Image 1 (tube, rainbow, N blue to C red):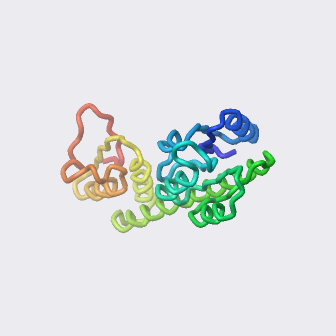
Image 2 (cartoon, rainbow, N blue to C red; image 1 turned 45 degrees about the vertical axis):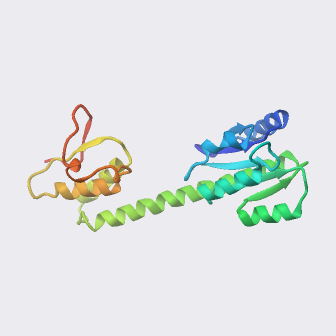
Length: 217
């Protein structure tokens, strides 16, 4: 249903964790179940393709502290809080902090599934928008350097964008004056490794590594 996206579910009670994990999986959701907030922390990264569902009362780091951590890491990750202790003040604080939803036990399984399905819908949309925005920004910047609307130039720009997200070394071939250094500069600027490469590294081939051909002579 949400390929590549997961529910990070934090619950310290093993029977409850197993039961609700099964409920979510039967609804077609992929679940990563954790017994503590500390166990969940490594999975929470900027841009992570997941939503978080956590009990509020946990040993050690509690659900509200986990919510704070998620918001500090990536405020666009939806967090659903679950509690057996009805507390209006707690719910208000959680929503103001950025919680997506607040569920009080006992609850129907359908309520839990619905909340997390909506949270995943929101997360999938946000990730897609961020990816599209990044592509548009990168394409706009490159078009100011690699000029031209011919099919050949559009193909060069498309190949640069495709290669920029890989770790492959790139060999650029072409006659003198055809813009090899401009292509190298664009590939460098769009690359995830742009902060690691400097100066003549853009032109110096690495021994023993695969080279991709972007422009043919």
